[in-house]
Length: 315
Image 1 (cartoon, rainbow, N blue to C red):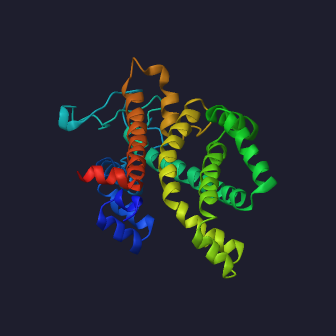
Image 2 (image 1 turned 45 degrees about the horizontal axis):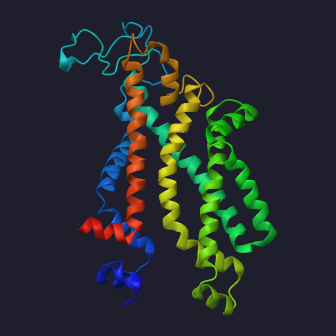
């Protein structure tokens, strides 16, 4: 038995011989408690986003002035908790433009999940291509690409996103591009390191000696081994992307009113934190729960990839 085999249980060693690392990672993932909690929360958020039209009682972008006799910034009204039945029910109150806060929170789930998956998805695709080419080709190509990535990483990501939006203009779409750009170097360097460590292994040399093309070796033999690591980084980055988008919207650079985005909701009502705290409390809690779900899931993926941590979890 080798030293590597001794680091994991015997059954795990046999599984390594018969199954892929990705399969084992997902199997261990369901044993991680933090990942289980993250998946439950994320599953709930996905269901809320899918069934938002059925869950939201009001149009999130439409003011209720002239439709219902509600006051500006009225507090929560829940009939089951004693609110008079002759008053319209708004379980999270209404905002400064007399829009139902609960409906806006529900629809904001769609926007935040879309921001997270779209920005990091774009960053993963572009970063993977850049890192794969840089690591496989090497030489001056690798030096030029990596020095450019280093320049981007030298800037604080949030400030760089603000600079990009300043050039492109305000709006949610430009904010998505900015967040994706600042995340590309992270995935490029991650993939490059994986390609550099794998391309000289025996199975790659065997494929090369059998006449496999460089593209086939890179995308069929090398890159699949980097997928688990990419999943971990992508999951953790989604939560950060949602937080960055909310911060940009809070500053008025991202999503623009009347779009029901949590950061925009916080920015619009930030001056009412003492007079109407519920208007900033609920969007803040929604952001916190969403980011927490992705962080827990990312931590679970990271632990699942380490056989030693998996063995300690069993003990």
